[in-house]
Length: 464
Ligand code: UDX
Image (tube, rainbow, N blue to C red; front, top):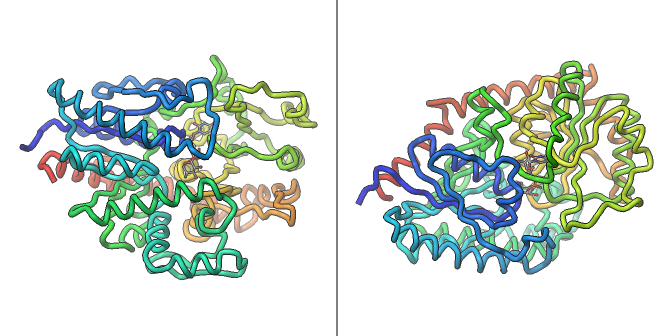
């Protein structure tokens, strides 16, 4: 029977880049009248900087054995998938017993078992795709007709491919799992993506919610008709979207108490002058690479805010982890271990974002009107970079040398290109502003993403 007050159960893999958009989705669902239970690991919940105390939002936590700090290993994903399934079963039964049955299970990437579980309980489910629609299309094509071609050419640097409805993609623009170096993750992640797509194809009425918006990826959202992609993004902190308080962020990390001095520091800088440098919640660089970035920043002469995350396994930073020019860096810029990124990006002093192009960072930057300097590392980041550089034209890509290192000169060159007075920089900054306006349009009441989400909730209420 139709339930007028639907109860959503949301689960994501316990990485920051997965939790942030899902938590934002939870808040938006509550905003349109739903209840939400958010299932995550004890460790991931403990890292949320602000435990969002939103009426209607409950957390349910379970152990994945990583409470003492994340120790990444090749079997993390299968272990997490098993524990998540067990926990979800218990939660679904307990919610029904409490008289709050689950109306719909929303699961994010890498947990295809959640969809099967929902089916076994006869509960509708929706897949939350936290990367661009373009990337989901690429995976679809890989598993549907183009895999052999891509695999056979994966080591050819001049390879490029035309996939229906997508921009032409070079080897650099394809997900890293196809082109070689991510062997461990490749096996588990690719297998999970394949399973996700198979499950969606079995559904009579598949539902895929995508962290993008209609104007950003109009062709990619329609390229694979049967996937029925619904854009509900950008899933960035709601404080930003309603123009009130960008600090209303669900972000998490190693933010020690009182370490918000960076906001004061940002306030002391003139408009559009600060370089923000951050590479998400997973990527780590060699000391050689860090030294090159440090020198590039120093030689650019510009103020910068650089996030250098503490080690995740609880290991102390050693003397050899220190940058050789630490003192000069701290004079010209500010080094921090974590920040409230959306707050930083939406600060008027921000001039550009040196980023690994994780999808959250990319779409947060687009939503804030900040041009980007891209240094993609793995997974979807090469594709995101392609879109930023060639489709939305709000950034450039750093080129690596023969040792796979971005030199200080290369960073300096790109900083000048993006922030300097040249024509290219002006164009990128103009485009960045345009995307900021279009983002607000999509998110406002009656905007495309707002309408799409409301329609989805209505369908759940009517029992799809
Ligand atoms: C992972 C994958 O690596 C990425 O390719 C994929 O698109 C999403 O999942 P991650 O590498 O952590 O994500 O990067 P990103 O997607 O950018 O997510 C990082 C999140 O942490 C962002 O929401 C960002 O705002 C937040 N963050 C990062 C902070 O709040 N503070 C920081 O100091 C750094």
